[in-house]
Length: 213
Ligand SMILES: Nc1ncnc2c1ncn2[C@@H]1O[C@H](COP(=O)(O)OP(=O)(O)O)[C@@H](O)[C@H]1O
Ligand SMILES: O=c1ccn([C@@H]2O[C@H](COP(=O)(O)OP(=O)(O)O)[C@@H](O)[C@H]2O)c(=O)[nH]1
Image (cartoon, rainbow, N blue to C red; front, side, top):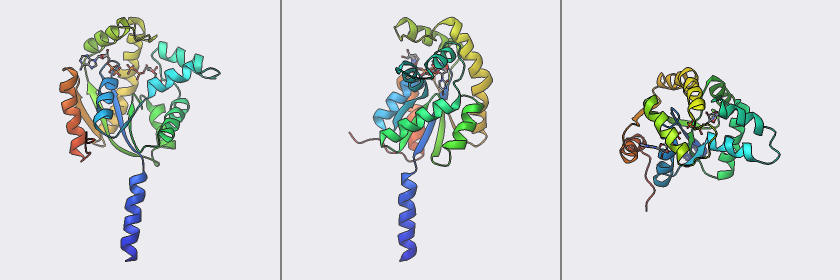
């Protein structure tokens, strides 16, 4: 009797642990596009680390605004204390328990910072990895800039730096999760709907249900 009550209680508490999917891939590989599809079909809140940093950069009185702008323009990674605290706040404010964390963790500082503060408070379900060639990604980011993204880093000079950071700092993080069999590789070179078919398989395979319409 008591053990069954305890089991139910523990199952309930387990359900309260926020569940996280990290979404990684080169700049322009389609992370944001796919996260917006996923959040419409599954009960996940989309948190883009880049968007949160851009918002913080614009926030009047932010002590980090200039530093964030400089890092973004140079394709460098903002210190994890700043990014992790923005993510943590956004998770708390959402009142939800399932999160797509888009564009994070991008380097060892990010990974260590997350592990220090967040990993024992959350459950990492898997890492979605969008594979896409640098040429295609560059074309997409330049297209996004030409279409009026207003981003100070959608230009060739910043893109070269962003790709260097991706190859040197982010790929090792993806490899780290790959060694734990947590990475779901997705071919991101096909059209967005086809990419999403593969993405859905990753979610369906762990039994995540689509939101009923
Ligand atoms: N599968 C795709 N095929 C062609 N263009 C795409 C695809 N996915 C996204 N895009 C476009 O490429 C640009 C970058 O996509 P985005 O989702 O913002 O990438 P990321 O978040 O990885 O930087 C956007 O203009 C988007 O509309
Ligand atoms: O966790 C993060 C996510 C983003 N960025 C910065 O924000 C930029 C844009 O990232 P975003 O994910 O928005 O775009 P992407 O480069 O993937 O297109 C990066 O180059 C970094 O300078 C960062 O410092 N930490």
